[in-house]
Length: 130
Image (tube, rainbow, N blue to C red):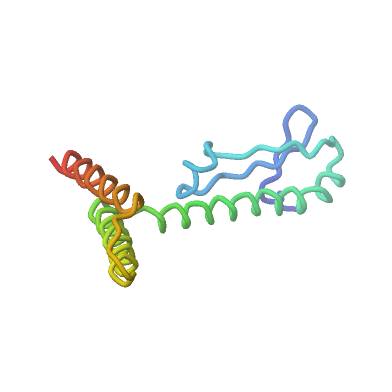
């Protein structure tokens, strides 16, 4: 009878041993997973192996999901600059619409804060680019 995959015997105990796929090793933090099946009986180990194997596969699936999410979120410096500049542009436009549609022109403290934040952010971006 062939040996079931992922089943290993060490010193009269049975273990599940699974190799971690290369693309998720950085997330899992190891190259293989070893779990005790907490039995020395071969038949009991065969009975417990599918559940333990399914749990390990679920961990691998979660790690795959994290890797996909992490790579989807990573942005280039150019993309980050564009996002920040669009946000500032939108905030200034909303502020200008609000101020110029009122009966009389009033400079709000929020407008001053947006101007200071914009200046500081642009200075920081210039330092990063240099």
